[in-house]
Figure (cartoon, rainbow, N blue to C red):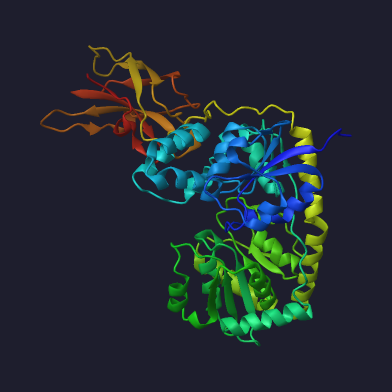
Length: 546
């Protein structure tokens, strides 16, 4: 039993910042304060609502981690947008316990580096967390190649996680990702606390939902789907709009609540597909209207691919109100029971994903009893597993367990396995050939010994690996300058590498050849299966006139 309460400095964006993590904090703080001495940290350049500042003690960011009576444990709330830049800087300097709301932090890194026309800090930080892979990805970004794949594949979180005493996440899937990438860091999955609001089917909620439908131009007698939260391409909202155009869903409307990223043109997409009159974009709504919007819907959609690993607070609020959901069959959604959240498969093409979603929507909307049962199960799930009091207790237990632990340390750069010959474009090496010394009489059979050294950065793959695998091609060519040399197929040899060859390693191969009649040339060069001559990639080759 502790002699005194745990002393916490709570570091997070706070209302009125338009952030789901700010709303999460307001829900969690009363329950944390009932178990610990909690002080809020005012982040530079961010406002704090008067009612929040009046309720809890506050300190400037420069005072984080200590006060006049001694040390305090920083409890960081880490998200993947610019609002968390100051949280990141504090967490890198002062070890604490970090709640990782988004497994991927690459978008934040992009925003605070390339978003400010600072390339070298981006290169350095990405290389620190991901070694040569991060460096290569950063160089691509330098030339404005803003593909999504490296952003989601490289989470850019290693240094900040290794700087902490422990890490909290909100799903078993996220905990697995952290353990895989940073096994030295203590990590624990805890439930995200969500207060249980009045159910969406109470008379007051129904009336508020009807009023909102009328205000936004939604019919009272039509099925309404809801998509809640900040709308980005990964939320698959365009897929939902495409599903509305499918046969059998002609009466279904879509209500979109939340800011829309500038890269999306949802209104234009709806017009293109002929469903504009059934797509209603409400934008950001205050919390009272947000609850009414949930009550105004029959079914919530929360698709996501790719994912930054976040547990959606907006989805949990919908479930808490007693509305069922359709989610992507992917990643963190695996934690949600099928009794309340139906999973729609991903598909290579948006058209196929939209067709699968449309088929699912037709079946669900035709079964109001099933939707009602799913909504009841959803509300019960949140009540049992996402109670803010239980969540706060789990946070405090982890903080008490980890407060004295030293951080693993994240100053050393990540060491990644070298790339391989299947993809790397520089295959420098050395080749030596013995046994082909002249004179070599016509018709004489000799043993040729080949020494091959990998002097490049990539690992050369063995021949049996297929594409990208390597073989040394030994060719005898016959002819004269007036009669161009031709490949003499019967005396050619493909000597596959029997095992991978790491940078700096060498291998020795042997073969027998008979010297043909007339002028001839011996050519020895590594080739890639499905890739051609390595000399085109800086690789070695050897030739001799016989």
